[in-house]
Image 1 (spheres, helix red, strand yellow):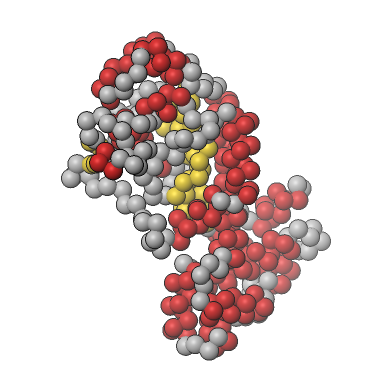
Image 2 (cartoon, rainbow, N blue to C red; image 1 turned 45 degrees about the vertical axis):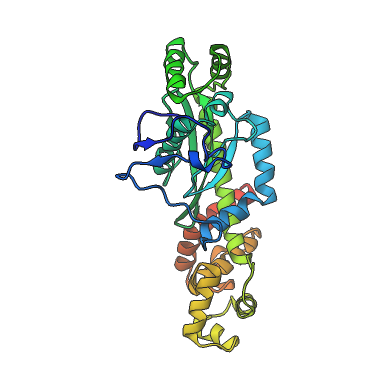
Length: 338
């Protein structure tokens, strides 16, 4: 969505935007030399967080949520990695007719991307909402894997107040500046046809995103533990050994010995294959096991901690909260509804 604030972004002379229409690479927006472009990892680069977001987007739970959210609210929703050079809602169900209209022009699209930059910067630690120069709002909720930011759940392209004729007059001038070749009637219909939500509705919508972001964080941990795409045999065997012995006082040296490698070599290969070190992986395996045990209300938290391999309750509580963002007692209360 367009905004007049943020870093300066220049574009070509108003033709089709390559961000939204990649078939035209000559029209990709560029920045001035004083503002280096946001890095965008290539499809082949090893970015475990981007790979994780890709896995979440294709998961059944996310696709079911995306469908239900849009059907219930009429708004688009998107799950995006931290670094992205795309408009998250373009082409999606529920996209604002006004935003869809302006996204195809690179001058408008370049300014829309500035809004996305401001939004993700504001939403790194907590939900945030920003408004564009046309008065539409976008909201984002951070998704974290422990204390690591891996992506954002976003919705928006809505008015939080009924748009006015004065706003439309400004938008008409902007449309001309952007080279938007549409009639006044088309622009009016698209602008005033955009969804308006009350403050209470908007608050509830963002809350829904926050709840689902917590679910995605839990799913992220499961994916990190279970993901075995193109793993070397030594890593698969190591994971099998870890799963069999996770309740013991397991060391890196023991696991390396079990797969007939040196500790140094195993440490290097394991980190490269999984994206995390041995200690973090072992903690995640133990936390996954503890989640199942927490479903039994007759087991004490301390019993579960020692059962899955932690040597102290304090350490278990600290690791559980770091990975899942909540204490074991809080997790148990939510899943059991007590």
